[in-house]
Length: 371
Length: 114
Image 1 (tube, rainbow over the protein chains, first blue to last red):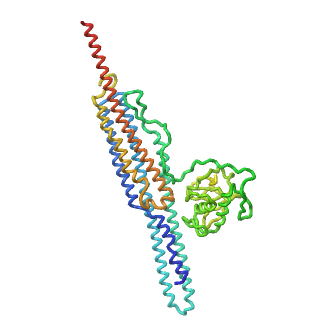
Image 2: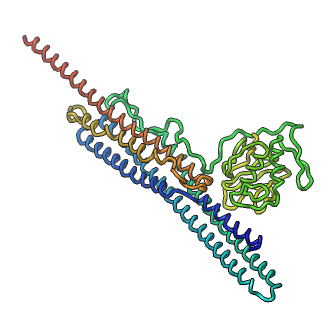
Image 3: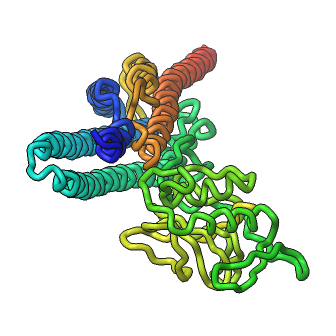
């Protein structure tokens, strides 16, 4: 086997193998989580029904304002129990959708992987057949032709796998965003908890069913796309800043040395191919991989994904952007380089005019990681 | 108790308290059994992609919030049980007070007759 053929065989499956690792999930754990929600809904549903039956029983055994207060309190708590059941069903549905998305993603990736193996196998047989071609001088050209075609097919199939992976992660992002949004809306209702007095027949011990007061709820989480509350970036003082020479020859000023280094680092990657999930500088980068590694090499660590790179300070308007600032969408990020331009990992890494639109994604904002 | 615009069967609130008492513990136990162990998934969970997409974080956040709410609602039912018992004690105290007044009035009337 020639070195070229050897390379193709060795690395032809690298991308699909990497995607397979990223898609590897735990169906048993996911199934366990779904089953737990089903069990929860059965158990808590019984609690709600029992509470309701006892309220009806109390009404048949008593009447008057004390009973009214007791039943109003019970009904308010029964409503909260129903909200718990609805929330459990919503989470269960999201888990089911995510599991299905991962399963389909795996199948598609496996299909592409199998197709690549078939193509490599067919090409190896064709290379064997080349050895019988006469005259022998024409064998070299025939082999090269087979390998070129194989390389083209592998590239096309790898591109398909990347597309499938991107679809999978986009679908997961959508499901997660809906789930995270649900947390925000239900945490608002969680603030209106039922207040229970010390008794139902004492005017000073009872404070009524539910009210809208109280603080915020809902802890933890994150990961879903949202706009964080950050301080507003302070414009640089006259005379400060660090100079950067742009590819077009123009000189711009970054607000500090870290931002200037990040911009220089990002510009050094112009022409590097787009690779989904890529963080290998000079080899293959995705959008957040470009910004993360550029800042990393400048001494500042950014989160890994685009939507998480909403860090530092918020830049309130496009006219206040400075080199090193990030333009962040729900699934994409670019770095401002100055002179109305930004650098981003498309395919390949390139410079473009600053914009706030990006196909199919919502714009989150402008951010200055160096604050 | 029968009177001006309301009635309460004897022991109605005590019976209600007895029935409602376990509900709080039921809801809290459901949170511990069915939510707590699944806030984060074992093994590969929702996969690396699940993490990078933000889904895993959103899921864990919702599960934690659900667990907290279940504990709060469970506490609410326990308070209802306590309030029902106190309600019954208040009725008993009022009944006793009324009985004392009636007995005193009866005594006074007896003295007047004498």
